[in-house]
Amino acid sequence: MLVFDEGLTAYDFGHGHPMSPIRVDLTVRLARALGVLDQLKVVPAPVADDALIATVHTEEYIAAVKRAGEDPDRPDPVHGLGTEDTYCFPQMHEASAHVVGATVEAARAVWEGDVLHAANISGGLHHAMPNSASGFCVYNDPAVGIQWLLDHGAERVAYVDVDVHHGDGVQAVFYDDPRVLTVSLHESPTTLFPGTGTAGETGGPGAEGTAVNIPLPPGTGDAGWLRAFHAIVPDVVKAFGPSVLVTQHGCDSHVEDPLAHLTKSVDGQRAAYLALHDLAHETCGGKWVATGGGGYAIIDVVPRAWTHLLAIVAGQPIDPDMPVPEGWREDIRIRYGRVAPARMTDGRDASYADWSTGYNPDTWLDRSIKATRDVSFPLLGLDPTY
Image 1 (cartoon, rainbow, N blue to C red):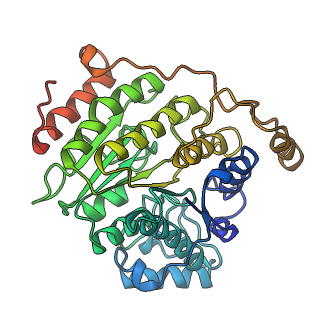
Image 2 (image 1 turned 120 degrees about the vertical axis):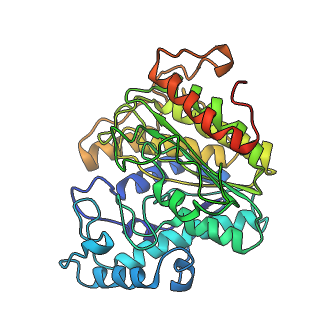
């Protein structure tokens, strides 16, 4: 299932801002052109009410977001609104509440058994904190979706974040909650916003081991990223034993993304989506809620990556060699004066060396993997040496 309606593109910081709603629109157009939406139930998104948003965010902050939307020219830096990255815009509260409603609807549909998999590609706003906006994120829809699941009977929820930036907001909300496992693979906090997500961040008192962070060196590509993922993520999620898997799919780890320094391809991102799909089936009967996230190469990368994601959510993965429809490419040429990619692949091999092939202490990547395994695995009853 895809939760989407045109109103979700109103989450818009304005011309020139990297977080352009064009990327969501182009993804839906490409998915439709390739027949992916024919395989998915597409439903409109409700707008979350204040009570639902307040399960994660403070009433003070919700009021501040409403004021910012009514008077966008008056910044509120105390609440992270009107800053250099999170601009104020008209009807900010309504647009942000719509994104939250979409993610909660996806979570509801999966939890209540309407569908096995559901996605909200406009969501994944993982930096927002309970009392402030951050990093282009006003309300933290993944956190509200997870809290809804907990409030409606889910005993344990695993959250895996593959955005290039640390999923700091979701981690912060659930850092002391042993019912939620947060796992984040991201570029090293020494080189990228938000500067958090070290291996030593493992969960608060009573929830030790329920935050797992895998900081990756700049320049990490498909082989290294997938090596790190498979060395840690399946083991910790299986050990935790979730009732449902929630994932965030920022595709700003791509080599062409202008805001970060990893070097993945669309092929590597597709491989990660397939692995998360399989992990949901291995651990929680296939119950999977997928959101979007970052991604600022809005023509060349995001639409292809998220169309692959939606095809996997639909249970009908797209052949990477499939041509991009000419009609979609022509639309890009006319609307944006750009030459769009011709195929759904970057022509990269998404193979990797499994961790079992041996640890190389001379590489930053392997040292990072080992640091996370050494600190997190014992807290989850796992042996880091295997």
